Length: 284
Image (cartoon, rainbow, N blue to C red):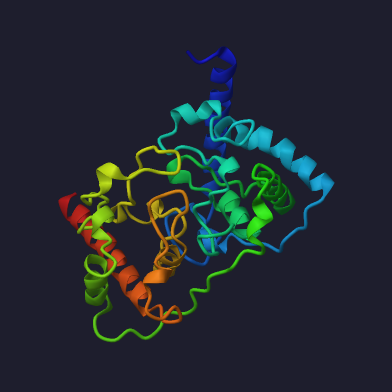
């Protein structure tokens, strides 16, 4: 049975989430127009700030004020409010961060953590903290890293460059569908129609051995945590999603410098989203 203290903390977390969502309802700050109030993940950027003792102390204060109710006092994702969230909070002690601009076998860039803190994932219960100053958000970045002592064992993060979309021959949606259903066999998890209902779904688990559902592309942009543009899909195909069954597809490319297959799949995913939205509007 939850204690009175935990109940109070959970209530505080709910209030904080409500405040953050109200703040997030301001005009979209990014150029990548999407759902009202949501900031595009990749555009949540700022000049880096080096760690210092003062910054770490401030980060610890902010973490216990803003983050611990969900992520736990020791960063294990077991805060009292985690009991009320459908999507489990991140366990920072594992060093597994889903969204990044770096290769899967390594750590994310500091700026990637800053982006996640700034943009948040409001649809899944993680509020945007863009109402904090940039300095405070960098303080949180550097404090979060202390939960994983082996952060530097991979060396400097190796970035992945998506670049501009290449000229695609023929019908990119048709080519994307061919790759989605064939070479990359995305339908095994995401389903033929992109609804996250593929045959492998019952056996999928995350890093904690908990069941995890693949992304349902038909739900629309608000459910795309790391961005809703085709370039975001390309980036996720390249980086994978650490801590989940979603692998990086880099090794599947015949030529790592040629991302045309990734772009074609991204266009097919966008087509699945748009088709589902048109059907919903027709049913209204």
